[in-house]
Length: 346
Ligand code: GLU
Image (cartoon, rainbow, N blue to C red):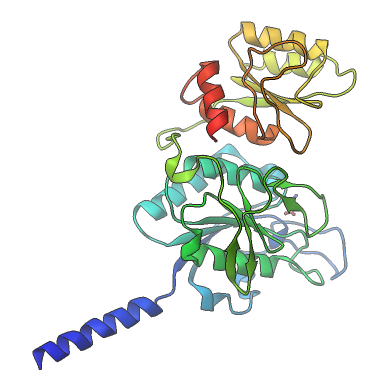
């Protein structure tokens, strides 16, 4: 009798744990997914208006995927993203995972700087549980708004056991995109995101992920960057290269007391003599310089066409991602060889 009761109890616990839904926390930061327009076919709109509760309520069946908790971190357009919010996102996620308060995190975000937040968290949150970032290209009030399906897919992905230890992922327009390569490649179309060097990690179908590949870079749990006690990040800027660029911008950056500069070079990371002179000044002042490119794919290696090979190169990190990696590298070292090693591994 006692044995039978024990078995029945065990089966009930097993059934309960099997039917328990994953606990997903949605951290809302604003953007078009929370945007509102005056008409359903209106191109102009105001981002960051709706609350996370309103957004969740607009997605049919989402509560069946997971036990959801929404937290409004801020409600901004992502061009106004701040270092303070990045650090808050890091701390919140680190705390949720460290204390096993949820099984996965979804972040709703404006699309303009989504790839940057994704890469920052990819390098700093040292856990294996899924972190998925999503947003929308059309406001919530639009005809065929893309936000609700993107959020459904993001929650479904964060709930999937297959999403563990894959680094931070962006889900947009059914694609699963890795934080290390994803970039915005269209200003207005719903199919605005791609991974120009490696292609998508996978796709979402029927609320399930289908993965094609893994990220070849170190990320999340295997990251060496520990920012737990950091209250402000090194200052890193980007200098853009173009035909007959003047030295105005580079000199201003050098004089601003920046810790690091990323060159968004033309072609294979090239820049003209005016910028080169400014970079020499930077070098003399101990400012770390990384050579990247404004070209969308292909990256930059050490085969410099002209000028200097002293600077580390970004390989296939675009300038905005190279800036973030340089920022984090500078929390550890000022040695250019070590920074080059970091750019190879992340
Ligand atoms: N510029 C706004 C932002 O990045 C709206 C763009 C969007 O979310 O698609 O938040």
